[in-house]
Image (cartoon, rainbow, N blue to C red):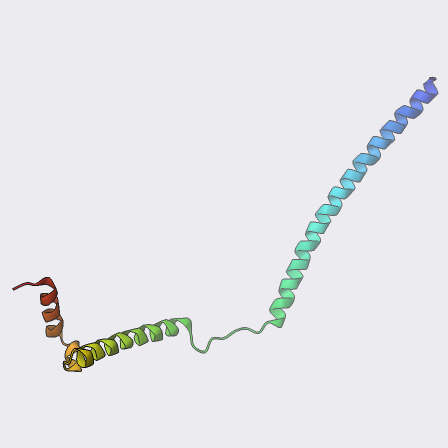
Length: 113
């Protein structure tokens, strides 16, 4: 091989390496741009969604719902106690609300004299 041929193959190899490097850089740049565009697209979609959605205003707030549910639970408990003591136990339903009734029940359960 002559020196000209070696120079040609050497320059060909160098140019091949350079093209590979530039292609790698270009693909990396494209990937970065794709990521940016994906983020931008998501941001745009979110903005459009916010524009189209109506703001939800609660007429019956959550804290009020919790209070109402607790009051209904207490009411159901009292109603159940009154039915159980008055109808099933053949007592006076209003007696279930007195402290002496519950003290008597506790004494019976503990069997204290």
